[in-house]
Image (cartoon, rainbow, N blue to C red; front, side, top):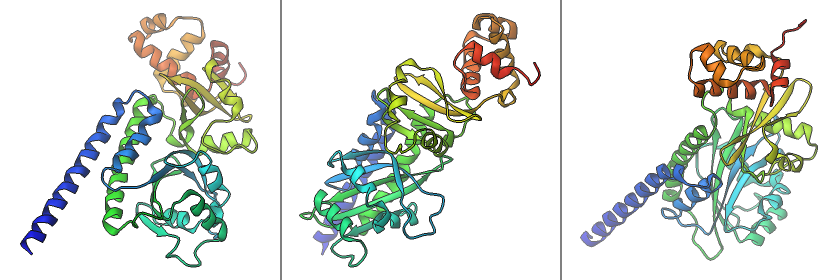
Length: 340
């Protein structure tokens, strides 16, 4: 008995050390040179705590009416480990009847476990065939609300038919790890985007130069869907992707709103913005924007306002994004008051 207790204590200590190391590695990930690899490396780190054969993660968009049992969630940004490139597309065809996925959506923050052999009559034959095709007999998922985005964030891990099922300890560890992962992911995104912007997370999106989404807010998703009929997936519409190299510019989604496309280092940001609304700018931003639109350089604007050139550039950059403009002519038009 003493040997068993000693072995248990040793096992618990080893698990605690691995869990602690994995959390510390999350804090180091912001130094990663490729932002599109952040989530992949974060999920890979969890494999050192709870083993799995494959994983899938991303953002979920839910229809406005989820009261019906046949609603179909959509994955708008995703990545995977050990799964085929067609996995997400195939899942969308069965999302309306996948009760495991809907259970995870129903119990936010909780790890939902499932094995299709031990859940009789829970899914249709299409779901069973899908699981068999991708060899994902045992599943465990955690779905969280991504704050202020209007979207959900999820991570699912899978084991094949030759592996054991996930247990309660696995579930607790995943719940705790995902809380940390989501926190650091938002912190990382916050460092990439302009900190002085007032736009909420729901009106913001981020992609790499190929148009592959790293993050998308609900309002941007809705605007893109309206402008590009039939668009759905984890990459920007082709017409936008082909124009990313020419940013900054503004896409017109309708007569009231536009989508400003601008570079964020090696990435591309999309910000939903309203036109003709200079009142959204702070007094200092508005002053800088008006002077710049009148033909002054940013250095002249800085001298006239008694601020540094760097601060002047920050004010102007914020004004461009919030007004949805990409040049001085558009800026002047956006600042013009009715009747001028």
